[in-house]
Length: 267
Length: 248
Image (cartoon, rainbow over all chains, first blue to last red; front, side):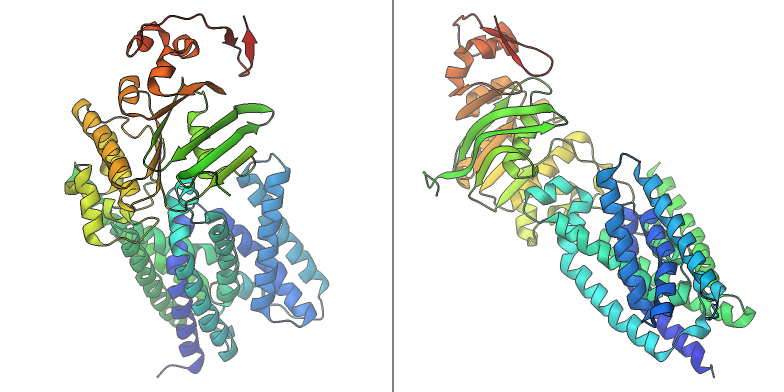
């Protein structure tokens, strides 16, 4: 019925959506959209590194993204520049350095469009394993740190005062962010990963009344976006990333009708 | 080793300095099981800072804190919930500890907000929110309860009822309470020990001793002093802007 590559893409996309759903909620709650973007931009550097050292792409992206997160934390301590300026600085300089390095690697042919916007043809069985095993590890870790992370998202001092160790939860969450970017880069592409994190979660906020329901709607939204997006991508031969994100956007727009209703009810 | 088995938290000459400015300095106090210690003082005198030092929220402090319990309930002075976070009262109750339904309902009933259980936190009034904060802090049956102006925005009759509740909790759970309050009248009647702050400890002791103290009067005025005392003293120093003390 479908080609193997399409089934692989579907399985990969579903795996990614299951993880971006809950993580995306925290990205919105903790206002980390641009932080996610910065890590994703730095992923290009990770990819080039993987090619030059003949290293696993996901692993090398994970290492570079974690490194950038560490550098960011150090810069925040050392300078008085505002957070968004530091994020912009790191995002664009790491993207630029990545592109310059690619320019030097004339002996390798890069599919830049695929890297930036995702390529469903590129998903191999090996990638599926990375996505599903990596995704399972991310979700289990998130479940493990849920209480301290969520409590400190609501109020840091409350979590600290009542002995939940929010700093450790935050550090672990940063690593999870780097990990989700590493495993989803082939599907969505590095320019659009943050969209996959934010848009389904934003849609979910419009429909939900509790944190648990927001996570659930966010996962459902992500799954629908992947399925609709991939079929569109197959039908019209568009890049997989933009197709998935456009589907997510449409779902978000639909969710706005629901929230309009509830605001009307309140008034 | 703690000198007294009843001590829950002890501050030894603690202080906090941010960018060469002392928020609070040289504070020593201890909270014991079943006792209510109240911090009073004008705005910016370091009451909340002292409470946070006792809770271990600040890492780089002067002096030392000895804490002998991990079962802590905290009502912060202010807390704002972002719209992006859908949070009902019920979700908020289990924020730091999982509790069963009966425990949650009991605590919400005690503070009179059980009817708000399924409401969104963002839709509550200031007073209602304050009652939920208190319910959450007591629901986990803490050994140490830190309450930073727990009745702000609560209506007059509710205020009295909540103070009575706090006193009752202290007796029933035998927990130590560190209370920050502006309501001098309540403070003077329900407290075991008063610490009067103004960047440093101005005076401390039993409510009656403190009310007699000249520094207390200098801070709060003659009227406040007359609540429990008719003594009159001259105060011997004034406070400059940097929190320094100048002898007269």
